[in-house]
Picture 1 (cartoon, rainbow, N blue to C red):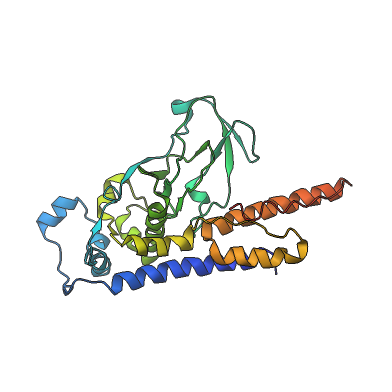
Picture 2 (cartoon, rainbow, N blue to C red):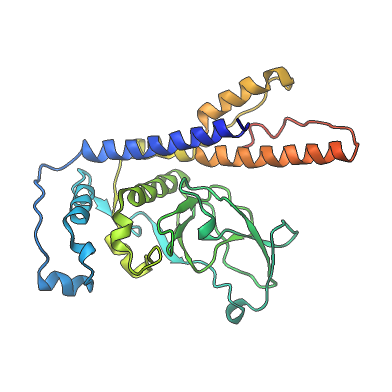
Length: 302
C-alpha cells in the first residue's frame, strides 16, 4: 500500500461525511409543507425560457423543493455575498502571446484548469503560464467552479499563491468579505448539489453540459446556521496551528496521525503534495551522492 493511500482514503471519508451532514441538516429541518408535483404551465416556461423536459421533471422539482423548503430558507450565490464571473480569457486575442510550462517557473502564473479539479475539491494538476500582462488572480476565499464538461467540480482557495488563475471555462465565485469558513461551506454544498444530480438538470447541452452564469439564479443554497456551516466546512477546510514538539523520527508517525485527525480535505491534499515533493528531493539527493538532511519543519504548516 502506498504511503499516501491512508490520507487519500481519509479524504474520501471526509467527503462522505460532508454529504451526510448536509443531507441530515436539510431533511431534519423542513417546513411543514407537502410536496405536490404539477406540470409546468405556459407562463412558467416563458419565465424560465427553458424547453428541456428534464428541467421540469418531478425528480428535479422535488430535490429543489427540499432545499427551498429548508426552515431558514435558501438564497442565490449573490445572497451569500459572492460576485460571479468567468475566469481569465487566455486567448492570444485577449492577452497576447503566452508561454506554457508543466514545470514551476519564476514569475509565471499558476494555472488551475477546471478540468484538473478533483471530485473532492482539490487540484490534481497545476500548469504554469508566462505572460507579461496583469491577469485576473484568484483571491483568498474565492471558489473555482467547473462550468463546462465536468459541471460542478469546485475548489475553494484558502491561501492562493500570489499569481493563481483559471481559464474562461471556469466560473470564479469571488467572496467579497473573504470569509473562508462560509466560502468552504458553500463549496461543500455545491459539491453536494453535484452529487444529488441537481446541476445536471440545470445545465444545458451535451458532452457534460454547460452551466452558464444566466442559469445560476436557479441554484439555491440553504441558510444554515454559522455553527452548522463551521461543522460542515471543517471536513473540507479546518485551519489549525500545529507545531512539532519532538523532531525525532520515532515520533513522526504519531504526530502525523494526530495532525490528520484535525485537518480537512484541503490540508490533507496539500500535505500529500508537500510530502511527495520532499521525498522526490531526498531521492535526488541520494542519487547525486550528497548528504541527506531531513527537515521535519514542514509538518504542521498546512
